[in-house]
Every structure is written in structure tokens, then in C-alpha cells.
Image 1 (spheres, helix red, strand yellow):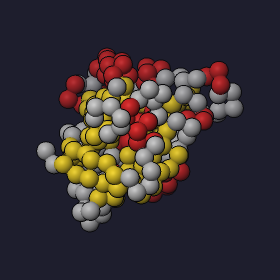
Image 2 (cartoon, helix red, strand yellow):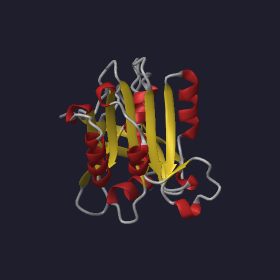
Image 3 (tube, helix red, strand yellow):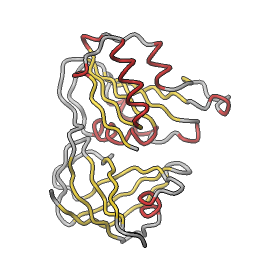
Image 4 (cartoon, helix red, strand yellow):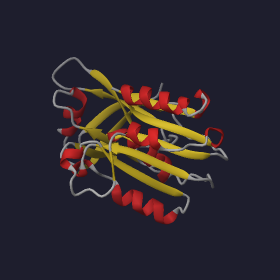
Length: 232
């Protein structure tokens, strides 16, 4: 497995607890949209490793890439990376992973919660050539937790077959929100899906993956049409 080193060139705060880091490698980094890197966390404790999906799209001859991270209160990986200074370096393994887009003639549904949108941002930035309908269903807590909205709007403007739905689960604090409310599972239970003409991609916590997969299978989707990447 390939070992690499990268230098932090930019830290972008997306919400109060979600940030994006831009890294630069000495040589162009080759990866497929949807793949991840495994970073060596080198704090004061014994080094450990944490995996993060690349959220930027692959480009020819570029040595820059982005990762999107949620800051966890006692999370070693997120806190160490959040405190990394511009010019600081990381050691990492990869890119690797099989959660990559497969060309198809079927409609596509991407389903994500929180930072699970990262591989889908890479998919969409890679300009999927699929001519059928592509829908992103994204679950977040409240309006303050929304990010990448401009990217999604620009993607929608450029691709008439793409649409996105944001649903907010913290309904008590979303009184000014005019969009969908509830969890992604609530939305899917009420949504009609053509099981013979749909491929789905899921990214989020284990519980969400299991619940959504069960709903999709009850709607008639075969397991082969449910691709997923889970994180804890």
C-alpha cells in the first residue's frame, strides 16, 4: 500500500464543527472519486490511524486534494487535524477504497448524512456522465449545519438531470426552514422508488446504513443495487 506525505495549504471552516482541509503532495495524487486516505495521527499519544474520504474531484496532474472533517469532542483524529497549522505535514496511506461510481443506465440516488457527503461531492465534481436522473438525499440536523450549498446549486445549474434534497432532523430548531424535515429514513419511507431502474449509494454512520438498506430492500431493491461506505 502506498505511503505518502502531504502539506496543509488551507483550512476552511464550513460550520461550527465541520471543516475542510486542503493538502498538497510533491507529486500528482492519483485517485478515483469516492476513495479515501488513511492518515497517521501523530499527537502526544501512541500514533493511530484515521480514514477520511477525499471530497475533491480527481484531476489530471494535480497534487492538491481536500478532505471534510467533523470535529468530535474527544476525537483524536479530528482534533489533531483541526489544530494542524498551515505548512504542517501529514503522513498517510492510499488513496484506496472500492466505493466508486459505476456507470449505469439506471437512475441514481446518493444518500448521505453529515460529512458522509464527502465522496458524493467527489463524484459530482468528477462530472458523472450518467444521463439519467441523479438525486442526492442529504440528512443534517439544522440550518446551521448546512454546508456545500453553493457547490450543490452550481452542480444543479450545470446538470439538468441532477437534483438534491436536504432534510433536517432537529425540527424544534428549524422553524424558519421551508424545506424537508425529519431523518433520511422518514423521507425514504414516503418516497416511491422504481426498484428495477434505480442504483443507490449510501454514506454515513453504521445505524443509518443499516436502516436505509432495510428500507430500500423492502421497496424491492436488490442488495447489488445498494452500494455503501460506513464510518464510525
